[in-house]
Length: 159
Image 1 (cartoon, rainbow, N blue to C red):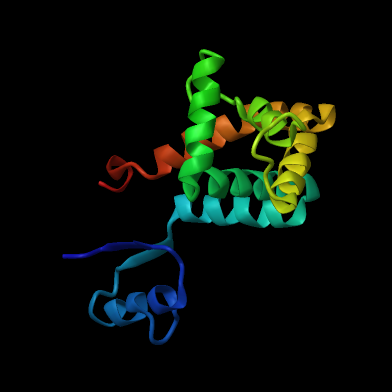
Image 2: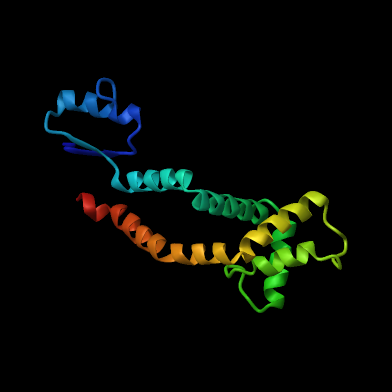
């Protein structure tokens, strides 16, 4: 018999009158329904990012970098070639060197002005002393939040 229900908190599950939890409580009076703690932690992080300008900018840059290398096989191939030349793995941050190459006047063929502008913008962000410090500062709290989130997601917590 179901006695505990953990959901992502949307109304279809948690609605007081017509939600799944409300319908189940009609048949199981002792049902305990809660909003998933790991999901609430994620929602809290998303809200924090929206309210903090530096976190928002960092999210935009990371999103751009993801799109740059996820959707462009050419860009990913260039990044891998650069990483190989630097004797690095792609997982390591060789982005600065890659974007420096993109904006170099010696590069042939020259990228479009839009690509040059985007590369310059990201390069300036990645080279900014304040942004490097901010990203370094985030390592500790994000590592703790990751550990906490993974603990909340374990099945053994609900058994």
